[in-house]
Image (cartoon, rainbow, N blue to C red; front, side, top):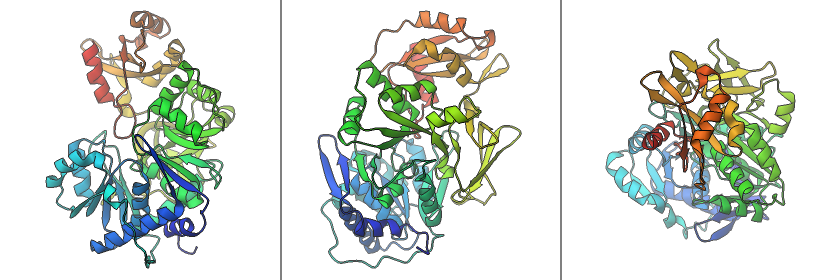
Amino acid sequence: MERLTLDHILFRSRYYHFSKTIKEYRSTSSVTYTYQDLYNKSKYVYTLLKDFNCHLQTVIGTLSPNSFLHLSISLGTSCGGFIFHPINPRYTIDHLIYVINHAEDNIIFYDLTYQLLVEELKSHCSSVREWVLIQDLTLKCVENEVDWPVLNETLLSSLFYTSGTTGKPKGVGYTHRQSLLHSFVSMIPDAFGLSYYDNIFMLVDLYHVNSWGLGYIAPFLGCNIVLSSGYLSQKQLYHVIETEQISFTAGAVALWTSFASYCIQFNKKPLNKRCRVDIGGSYCQKELIKNLETINMDVIVDWGATETGPNAFMGRAKYILKTSSLEKSSGRLLPGLEATITEKSQLMIRGLWIPSQYYKEEKKEYQSFTDRIALTDDMYISHLCRENDLIKKNGEWINPREIEELVRPLFKDKNIVCIGYPDSLFEESPIICIESILKEEIDCKDLLFNCNKNLPLGYQIRNVVVIDLFPLNANQKIDKQRLLELIKEKL
């Protein structure tokens, strides 16, 4: 393995993983594939792109949920020397048009789910020569073997865009070398801790930096993979994890908070097989860690971004709580990376798989972030607050996370968020929102009284508001702008 290129994943899929499977759950059924199927379909994707006269480093876009065909496209594209660009369908239409044109996608594979969206996009995306329906690939194959290209490890293998919550999305390209090094380190015990013997449920979409790296890691190791190409309710999620004996999965805090609440409210029995769950996106509360532990789930916490591979800081929650000097930590810096913080508590990071520039922009020494961060001497991280989330009340800045921590015991297992709401007297005032998926009766006035009884005078909240389901943004985090609109309807 003198070249660090992703074609090694396909080689292993073809020759080494005969007893392992890839199972896709659809809306009303499931289909099971072999790794030989994965190799064959990836081979077909490569030959199709060659037939389309795509050249080395042509950008190939996708609009699709996680599926066997989408995974095949990702490998057939990257291993064929093209650039795999999964597009986030949660973007606004303006951001979708911008991202496709900025990336200069040449071919776009799309799932039938997004047929109407594609019809709206077609006239605005001049670089796209072909729009290919993914379902049309189902029965297609190539009988003969193909000559895969010998690739340089510095070629780009994939391209992802940031969520665009503070402006236009920015592109981040990863080379074959960076992708493979990220995969190697993400497997270690201090990270995902994965092996050939794991059953992985890939819940994070491929457009979120290749399912947080699992899109390469899982087939490289030869794990049994479970995919879901449609929406899963909490009941269905529990069923799949239990039935498929899942030993590893991942997702954002909001997903697992809702899942834990469902399991507690319906007295679900602990899972038969111990399941590790990587939780990212924002800080994982101790109560959530404890609740998932009762279901037989072992929490891994992490901090990362589109610009960091994405994995940068990781660790087992139960060990971090014992060893870190930080009360709230999202993991320890992974081997191969260097990090520091500025005087303004902003993170700067570089390393083996960290790109030195945004796509089509100038190089820089470090990737830097405006979020407020704390680092210990032994490199544990605490994500204090996003700068845009700070609440300015009466001229003073308030960290909403501090309010959430102080009042959380009053809300038991409920998912809550504190947000600043426009106030003619104080500029902004904190409001607590409660997610109530089951729409049970909640006494907001009583909660408001008890919250303010526990809060310092300057932190007093204005209202407690019940929201049926928290809106999520393109990055699967709570969409604060849409949440403000829902609050406005309630007040």
